[in-house]
Length: 149
Image (tube, rainbow, N blue to C red; front, side, top):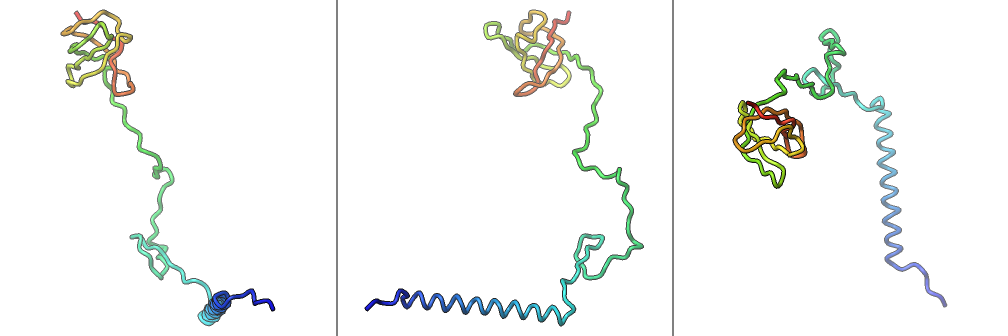
């Protein structure tokens, strides 16, 4: 004689599954019945002028009209400052064998990197120079460097 393919645990699990399905169906029917009694639907929620949720609709007379042009979605544009692109400075360090050095701006006292490819005149340490700034990989670089007499 062959034994049954279902074990005790399988039958118990099946019973629990059926019981859960029936409970779920009962809850669903109870929700349907409740929505029919109360008029159905989800209650509305409104947002007042302070951003709080309320159950009363807002007063249309207090509505503020906003012009479309006054709304800014992007980052505000920077106001370009008009300044002289030619700066003056002093060479604080320059290594001819390696081909680079640093120039200190006389106005801002900032150090700017200078490469031999950005030179117009031959420069040495402590020379007074004029230069222009250009954005490089690690900061501002001095280019078009010329000696000031």
